[in-house]
Length: 157
Image (tube, rainbow, N blue to C red):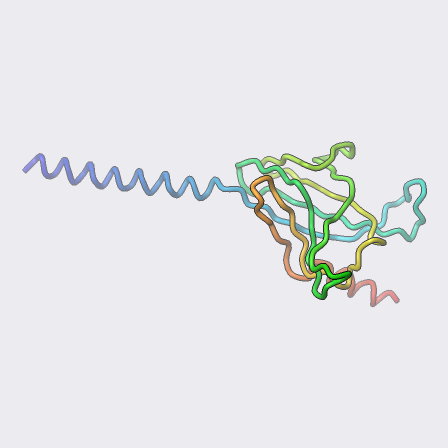
């Protein structure tokens, strides 16, 4: 009788431990939030006019496992020059350092930031931005990430 009770208690503890480990495995996976915004640099750096707009793409790591971001990309709503995706070129700022470049390794709560001029990108045709990591996973922004900025631009014109 006691053997059966000890065996059932061991089974319950073992199943609980297994569930706990599986849950921790899924919670420790990385999660990246990608955001996009447009800003003006004041004062404008040398060689840029005061009207120059800068596209800022940010990837924030929301979970404990570190991630290495290897590139920022975008999806067009309608194909441009036969392509439906594009690579965003620019300078990456890891935390506050402007000198670092891609790939950017980010830990929990850290930000990989890429800045580029908007002149080379058709902002009105962008469906998504996404960041790619070393495993090949694409972390997407919300759909039409620059809509609020475009509305403000139309209101001021």
